[in-house]
Image 1: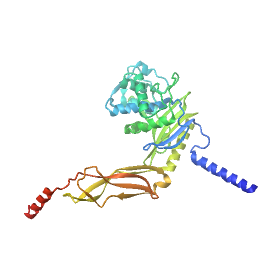
Image 2: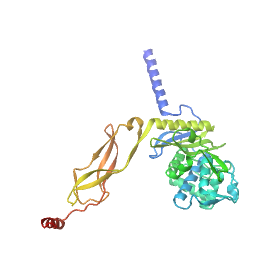
Image 3: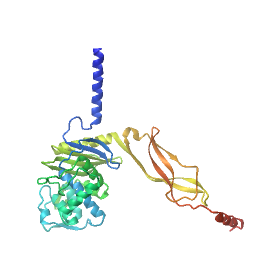
Image 4: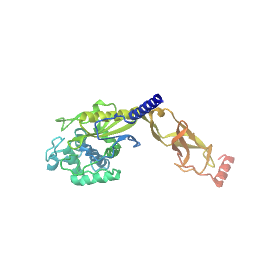
Length: 378
């Protein structure tokens, strides 16, 4: 009896240990207060631990700064060739900087590069002033954007993340993942976040990326680091492999090395255990149509995307569900069937099959006219 009890306890402990290892890609102990891993296209959380604790983000703040800058470029309010003036206030920023001088002007392109690669506080403030007139006005936009994205636990007090004098400049790993995902929707940002080393001022000032994963992690393509004595070491690390874009956020680590290691482990976990399947919109075989001049209706199916555990990616199958014929009239874009996607016979999603063009129903008068023309050889 005692032997059976001991065996049962041992089996229970083994199961618990196995589940713990599977549940935590970072192991039982790791050096960070808060982490989260998401797949960017779907926004699905793949792993999280204490992801909603409000913490100081340091320069990871600049993800929102860059997001608003990218929107200004997209809207035409800022051109990359614009020369951005530098105020005394912008030039006075401490911490990471490119040592802008009051009255100096460099292009928006070099400003963005300096913010992204070197975390330049002076450039962040200069861009904020150029876009909104003042840093404070820009910060109001940052908080409005955060609210619009559903970042419920975030308050920004400046554009840099400097926190010596801030009172409530706080966010969470989850909210950072949200704004990181939004920033990655702007393809232009990859022109900067993937830079390892570069220069500004006609090659006179060198820049080296504060995100070491860009050089040392396969597929790394962003995004932003940050560190202060209050915030510790933080990162929003982005990487893409086999068409899957991941975002790993690490907050309040004790050193840059352990911060990077946490991010690496999170990303490794995502790439090892998950994959994406993507079908682009494409034409299908035509469907017979009745009651129209045309005999066939050209159709296409919409795109389909799904995130799945890697073991199931190759199991995904699909079937086309369309009627043997369709009756006119048909409007362009009208749904006429579905492509259904399954894993082991279980439906996981579907895309619409739609008409490529409008087809009118042929009326009696048109039929009669057609018969006359055929009869008289017209």
